[in-house]
Length: 240
Image (cartoon, rainbow, N blue to C red; front, side):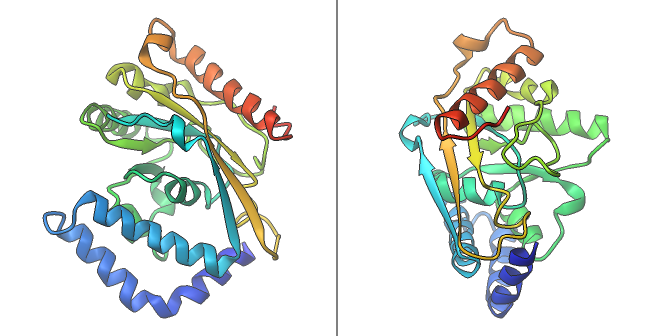
């Protein structure tokens, strides 16, 4: 938490430039392509990484699907998770986050600029609407980050159970699932570490529709979770 506040303080001086620029990009998508907006988001993350002494190692980029939409399902550790993945993922993507947490400093503008989805926790009807929207977007080629565990309190490098309902969007759109293993992603903003930290973003082999068709969503959730746990074990982390 200390580092999170430090990053905010160190970037306050940039706010008069960053915030109006991000709002302008959101309000005028006809003038700023998705690629331009995404590149600006990555620039913002570079500022945060530098001011927070955060390094992120990236693995498995070459396994990502080269065309079409897909959904990335990472384990969830903290506030840096989506930022680390966006930094690592070269092609434009968006994400889903808790609506209640989506209006803080710079986060609101990032959510708006990248067209992220605001999820109302415990609102089942709204959750279904979001899943339906993601389904249609992914069919059109959009890429999303979806945290199936839900919350991240005290998760650290332990992977909790994935919610089966979050996999309905890929089952309906018949698009690839990309499991993503995050290691030490909690350290930047959800721990008391004060020195330099290194996180890992590991893209696993995509799971194409041909492999998971006929499976029920609880089975898919279990499979994706286990693959993440197994991959983290390869890096010396007991995540089970």
